[in-house]
Image (tube, rainbow, N blue to C red; front, side, top):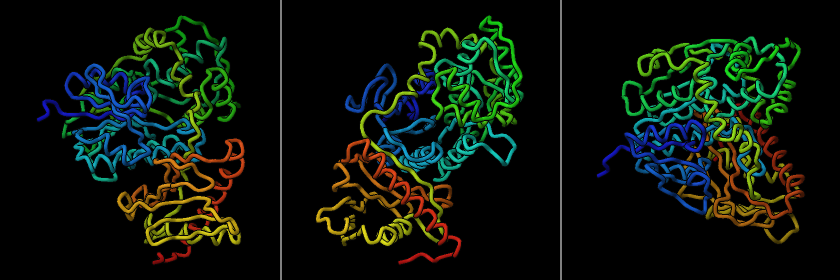
Length: 475
């Protein structure tokens, strides 16, 4: 019989996760989930126990790995956000990558009997025209709730703490520029929060039934504009920085400017800059006030973070994000419409029917009784691709095919194609995971990879026409 309740933390190697683990380990048995299995390790080293924390390797793009990782846990914390490429070649938006991970986590949590998921998302302004970044945060929150596991959603804006990418960007902007340009977005109001307060809030709601199913905003006691935040950061750093109004700096130019000055990847900066037009102010902090109080003032939070930031090498999180994933793995995730009355299995069957007609007379698809699918070029005796339908791991809302070789694919046990329903059946994600091409990389990215994207865009249009016509599902 286990003596302590178990909390699994997804995203444990991130800056919030690293601060949270020692707090949780005082009261819980903590299982830290990371793609590498242990901090600084690799998948080959396997799982590890370091101090009072058990580290488990878990690729959240894999439902099977998520199920194994959450086995035995009572509660789960979700801190994952895919702002950067997850493979050497990633085709798809960060929002769709986030959606697959959240869907896997929700499914695995239900299978494991998880009693509560605690999710750290972003503040959501009262605005129907959300940026893609904020809309994605809301989609993830909804997806985590989709399987019926109680979710406690904590929403926060800019988190002030060492190793945080947003805090790194803030400190680098103030520290590196002799004068600070002030685009229109610098007049937007924001309510940053200290990392210590965020960690305390997460720890305080775990296992508290009164918070199950609740949504709560978390913020510091200070509300200010982004210009005021830059000025106060300069004061804490004891730097004099004149401000130059520059209202004509567009979001695209702002992204280039911030990325160039700070060294942060544009894939990270772009979505963040697009969100700066929204006031990021907490609307309901009643749960926070009841649990931890007003929180740490802005200036004090920055002072606390700076020494640790320096000890960590300052900006190391940005350097890690800029690193390309190793290996030749490919991940492609495309969002498709779901015709009314259809499910994901129907879409997968339609794809296999539609593809040879779309590529006629060059490509043929042969579907065998055992679920094996063979793709061939006309006149070429060997298969281009071989897919095996997984009866055991498939369902009507998530059919799964394993990629088992052919002229264009290396045989790899994790290579797979899946179609899955998301957002309560409003959309389909067609995803290829861990695909390893046989073509030389330069040739692959300029031929096969481009063809795949073109095919999926055409299939999206095809499904859209079926949805518009109200086409019934086919047997």
